Image 1 (cartoon, rainbow, N blue to C red):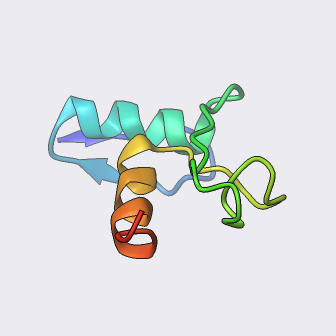
Image 2: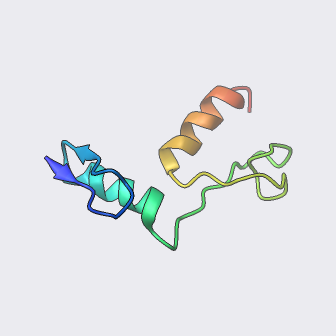
Amino acid sequence: KFVCDVEGCGGQTFARHAELRRHHTTLHASNKPNFWCHVTTCQRSMSGGGRAFHRKDKLVAHVQSMHSDV
């Protein structure tokens, strides 16, 4: 098992090292990546004024569920 050793995280465990890396990048990194929705009228787009996704797979799931007609 792979354990997050960041103070205050609670020692969350992961089965794979890749999952621990993703966890660290998503929650603890100071330079989190931003993935914006491409639908300009969406609240999760840059022009929509909302929040970006920090994981590409979450953006893909959002587009599939919210914008399947686009």
